[in-house]
Length: 108
Image 1 (cartoon, rainbow, N blue to C red):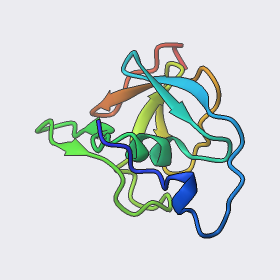
Image 2: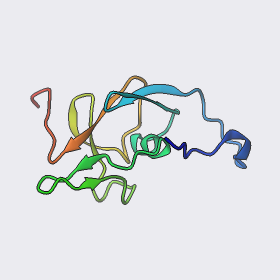
Image 3: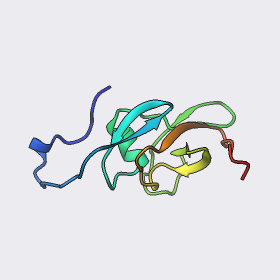
């Protein structure tokens, strides 16, 4: 998978990221940095599909990036309909592709 983050030696802004931490996407180990959204971390890892549509199963991912379009809905720690572009990724978070309207595994 191609890494899309700016390498530290190429970072002209000299941003201090903090240490990377683990999370999972579809059971696959990923890494993120403090302050990143789920969407940013997934895009940096080269993942473009976050959910599929309800009727035709078409792939969707980051589109607007500001919480208006709802194309980036994912399941986070069993809770569906979380906007990947707005939710900050946290250590050991479990993120899954959402199929259609999602399924709340906690019964909420």
